[in-house]
Structures are given as structure tokens and as C-alpha cells.
Length: 569
Image (cartoon, rainbow, N blue to C red; front, side, top):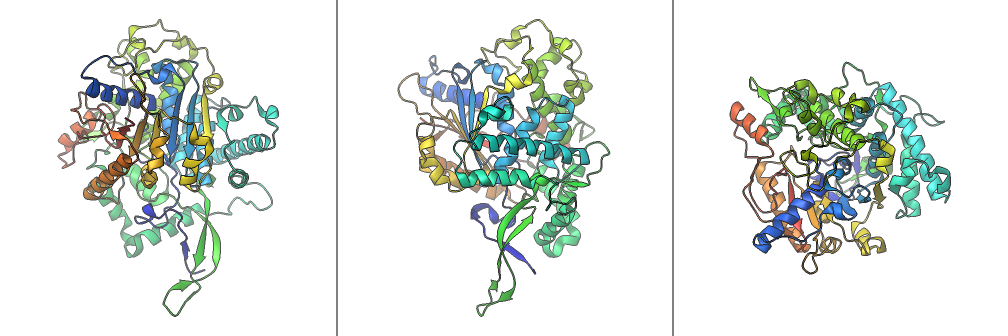
């Protein structure tokens, strides 16, 4: 086989990298979708009601529903569920419909959520496993065994559900959280095949059957071409001209270069990574280059090629590594960030897990003890994960019951947290929609009666902003009705796009969203800059970066400027 050209089912994003078919992570920070919905509704109401009192019910007043289209990973689900108590509605069920272009991406959603909601290991270990599986192409031996255990468990539960024997696995949180009833029989078989492909054991599975290092090198040689020998210089150029200029300099160059060259984005201390991350190994239909026809076109056989067909350029750091509630994580000293994106990612995941098991944001705990806010160690994920239950019995304070600069929304109530993590996850429902033709998914009977509070569209799926999509959002029918909110991910952190292309992408996305029957939130001057630390860094480093606090239609105050927000009014 002299070459391989896969048939691409979705051509829009293959122009940048023709072998980038699967999206295993997002290109924007994680969002608390309930917070975004509340802010968008308040902004629209204030602009349309001229300051009159609003009657829109908050998301916490009733069950919250969202539709995630091509988000790449479950970052929005994790953040929204972790902070759900800030919005009240402690016992309300939250439902998320998930659509991805392939079943391999959908299966990774299930795996990553299962890692966090499994109580068989300490929080610190689950945090490391989660980020290692999310960001690394190769993993430790213990993590490979952990993936196998989770894959076997997912296969066992899904097979029981598909066979109608749900009573035998009803005690498992997987059966309680994931709803697979919308999958067709072929899609069910594909899902089980993905779970089985993650196993190293079996008659056809050997430890060294797939070489991730060789696969990464082949992809790199094809991508860089004649510049392969100078790829380190290209990495340096991409980092300083794109990431630093866009305010993502908290990503350390050493980590970015290590991921671009080897696929390791989350180094775990001084560990080695001898095993393949099987969740990133997928199969694609392609055509070999066997001969050239009379028209000088390559011809060959149809084959099923196994390899790494994900992102090779931008990186997995944006989901949890560039935004956080704690500004101390972005402090700059001597023109360098004190923390980096790896530490920020650990902090974000650890703080979400802490809030799930205690019901209190970690930043609230820091404020309750004098001197903790100035202690760098309190931003360490290991400290958060090691916080004992005996240390969580604080007396309620006003910050937890009213909105303020701590970011806790009104109506949240402080609970003395004895609720286990398994009990907490019972409020979550993840409805898996089958991959494939998105138009058929939109027009299916399963979504006909849906009125989503929030619809989130990933940048790689911006072409799915169709007129039918707006009909699935909750409509504002009469006074006091709560309109649905559409969130579109931008291309700000796409390394291969320049500023002009990013602006064109944003304008086109806004045009498609408007055709879908939604309108951008009114432009307003930001009261508080959510990225003020990044702006300070640009001043210190003397870069020519565009301001990360761009003011325009679709940008919400206090929310990152990567996402554009629209309201169905």
C-alpha cells in the first residue's frame, strides 16, 4: 500500500488537515450552560423590557435540557452538572442530548463521564486518569488497564440494556445516566464494537498490535511534507503567532511542543507511556494508491484503515486549561505565567469533582479560611482532591445564597454534603443520538417534542446550523416565557487559521444562526473582563494581540469571546 486517501463524509473542515476526521476534544473553554442561559435571557430581557422586572423562570426552577452538537468532549456536561446547585433546583433532572459525527467520539463521551462518576478510586487518581485519557495519545500501563476495565463495564451494561435485561444492571450508574433508546440496531452494534476495540486482550488483540508512535509520525510526515525536518520551528511559529497572540499563553510552549511532536499533552510526573490510548485509535474507509488511470488519477482498492485520525495541530488544552474561576492561576511574574495549562486543567477538573461531592465551590471554601486566598498551594489540585469530609462542615455563609463576585447564582442553597458522588450523578441524563445524517436526526420523532433550553454547536459542526435547528429551541411564546439559547463555538484557537479567516468564520456562523431563527444577544460593554489576566500578560509581554474582550453582537459579558450566544426570540 503506497498511500491512503479516505473518503470524507463531512468535507467542511478537511481543508485544513485532510486526515483530521474525528474530533476528540473541543476548541473552547468549558461552560456552565445554565449560567450562560440565565445571562443571555437577562440580557435580552433588559434590552427589550427597558429595565422592567423580568418574569423568565431560571433554569434551576425546572428541569434543564440541552442539545450538544459536535462539542468533542463532555466538558460542558461536567461543568454544568458540577455547578447545578448554584442555580437551585437541587433535585431537578438535567438532560443532555449528544450528537457526534462518529460513534467513536460518542463512545469517548461515555468513557470520560464514567471515569468521573466511578467511586472505586480516590478523586486525585480519577482526575489524573480523566485528563490522561483526554489529552494523551499514549498512556501509562495502569491507565491502559483502567480503560479496559471501564470498556468491559460499558460493554456489559450496554449489551444488557439492548437485550432488554436492564434489571440486571439497574444498580450501575451507567444504566441510570445514559439513555441509548434512540440508537438504531446498526448504531448499537457500532457502539459495542468501539468498546471492544479498546480491549487489548482476546484472540486478535496483542499488546503491540498498533504502534501509536509510528502512526503519529506518519500523520506528521504527511502534514508537514517537505518541512518535516523543520517541524520544531513550525511549532514555535504556530505557538507565538497564534496561541500567544490570542491570549492563550498560559499554555506552556514546552507542553504544546511536546504534544505536537509526540502526542503527550498531560505529563503525569516523571511517568513513561508505553501503552496506546486505544480510545484515539479509530478505523476509516479509504482507497489505496495502486495505479494511475489514463486521466492521471490515483486508483486502488477500498480498505478499512486503522490509525489516529484526530487533531494534530491545535491541541487538547482549551477544554479545561485556559479559563478558570480563580484568577490566581493566571498570575504573571517576571513576564512568565506562574501556572500553566496543565495545572489549570487539573484545578478545573478537581474543583468540579469537589463541588459535586460537597455542594460548595472550592473558591468559597478558600474565602472561609483567612489567608487561603493568598496561598498558592490552595490552587493545587492535590489539595482540593485531598480535602476530607471532616473539613467540609462549614457553617453556611451569605455568599452561597446570593449572587455576588463569587459567581454563585441566586437561589443556591448550602448543603452539608453527605450526598455521595453516585447519588449526585443520578440527576444527570445523557441521551445518545446516533451519528450520521444530522438532518434526519433533527426531523426524527425523538426531537419533535423537544424544547431545549440550550443548544451548543461545536466549531467543526458549524455547517449543521440549519433552519430546522432553531425549531428545537424553546420558543418565547407570550410574556414570561423563557426563550431557548444557541451557543456557537468559534475558531479563535484554530492554529491553521489567521485572524481574517477567523472573522469570516464568525460572520458566516452568525449568518447561518440568524437563518435558523435565532438572534444574537445585544452587544454591550463588558462590566468585568473575564480574561483580564490574559490582557495583563499581553501588556507585560508587549504582544500585538487582539483584545480578548471583544465587544460585539453575540458576546456575553463575563463569558469568553470564543462562543457566540443567540436567543430564540
